[in-house]
Image (cartoon, rainbow, N blue to C red; front, side, top):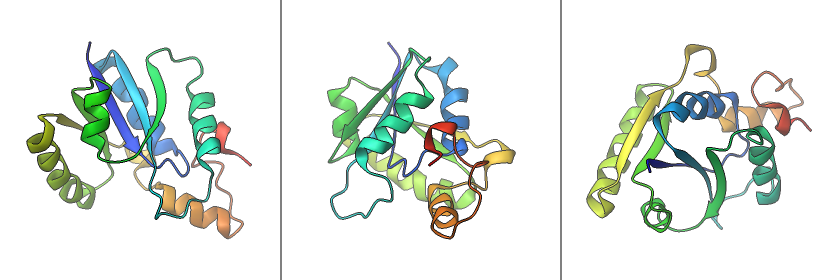
Length: 150
């Protein structure tokens, strides 16, 4: 079984995440959307809300599993018998950042990273931009799936 982990904070899930996940579905038998837990990070949405948003977004997709984890992503991948880490790239800065992480993950656990480039219509969207728009009372409806709308 080809299983991939798509790790992130998903604070909140965006249409960019959705683009990558939907386009990756034909490539894998299962995609585990893995919400990383970092005790030092301040989140806008609670862990329960982030899980709920993801589960509601993919309620009709049997190839998607939602999970949480702490610690190294490669350790979670090994626990889940996942041979791939799925990552989305918006721009060349993302690639430079993700490249060294992918090389480290490969050396730690022989796990392959698979990169998909975001579709142009969502490449400007990031969770941090969405949080900033929400904080300042802007219209974020065109940046997130329905499950996130407050």
